[in-house]
Length: 429
Length: 177
Figure 1: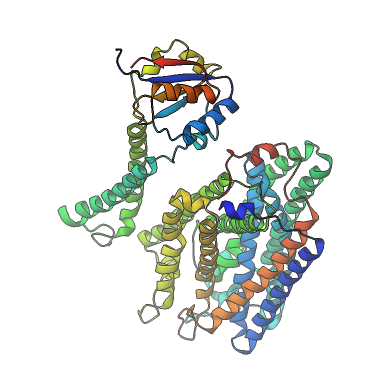
Figure 2 (figure 1 turned 135 degrees about the vertical axis):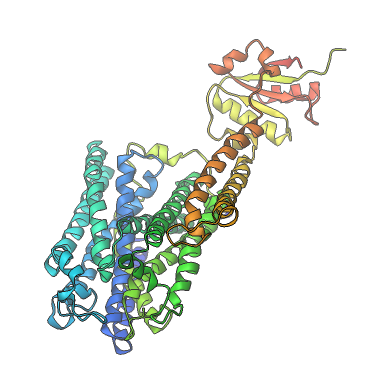
């Protein structure tokens, strides 16, 4: 509101930035330490799964930001020029994310832990009630795709694609700040034209290898799209948090106006509907076809082996259906909820929390107890999942905060910077 | 005595003159008045103190109607009027009624939005008093106008005329009703 807009911009020194970055790093390390302490209370399986949730959560956000940069360039968008720089800082996190993902790959190559996350990594892995993975016809048919070499090579390729694209987009944009050469804009457009299909393929296969293959019997052609929807929603929500934060701190004062928040709020609403469309389609087709190879995936998220409902049923209805769709959908229909900063910040935080639960819903029920039932969400294991997300998050935020002060706040010499600064000409609320 | 005029019209040379003038008319408390410009001017609605459109309320009502229509239609047809088992599914489930409901949500929202827009902007309008003004065609070309209508409670010929003069309006003319 206008009183905040009037507050004087804080004077920011390199020191204060460094302090903030160090704090984030400290939070990250603390989160990782807490997750490791979890090894004394829960099994290695649980900790490895928690780690997978943490890494895939922040990778999803970074992928979303990478896609937003490329979508911005490919559409030659004007309004988003002033926020694009924040995405460019955000995608610096791919390098630490690759390092943070590495332990899961390394564990798969150690003899004693090769099936700690993905059961199909170990042909001798015993399936509940029927033989081993190696003798499972559904595995044998998929083994050309689901094997350790492919997994390792593909995971390396995903990160290589994302890191390469991020480096190119960042370099061109940052260089344009100094020389103002239009060719950097053109170069980014070409990078984006190539990068969007590459990133789409990489994120689809990443979702299949990292998450969907936890239950490799299952089929869903919607899976990559579901992951993509979460990537974009996560990126948009974290962008809102960054925008509000930098506006309140004074940096974005006079740069952002109501329409920037309106535009990003509209995208949040659009992708809320898109996410619901994809997620519902997946559920509806499986429900309608009623084929056991597919329905079991939802069954373990609804009932125990004895038919009694388990926790995941309520997670699905309350957190996923209402929390991830109904509430943000109805909330974001309102114009004022999109433009008043505390209001859009609230729903951005809300959706970021629910994305975490959505990933939990997709990853954690693959953890089974002795009866073959999904381990419940709410219990001590949730603590390690949260600490893993905080741990990986601290490192990612550290990466962002390290990149932030090195460059100009906005791409001052972008050909469309003026259009972006006067996006429909109104003042922020 | 002639009939009450429709109002007073004044011309302005450029956007910034019009913008500042509009702010002053708004601040003077007029409600029934308008700006005529050759092209859309960003920020003019704000300068005029125009509130956001009420069309979204029509849209919301249309959307809710569409969703309820879809759900109740499928329920009526498959579970009430002619109960039929298809594919071993229950007579009614929101699952298979949902695609229909959401298609109808979109359809009814679109109808309500278009209809609501026409209700709110009162189009089509075959006659408007400003069309009699001999310079009005320049409002499609290079001139900007402010019209203050006589039905505004604050309107009085002399006072409104002096306001229009003070805010820089040229060629202040009385419009026939």
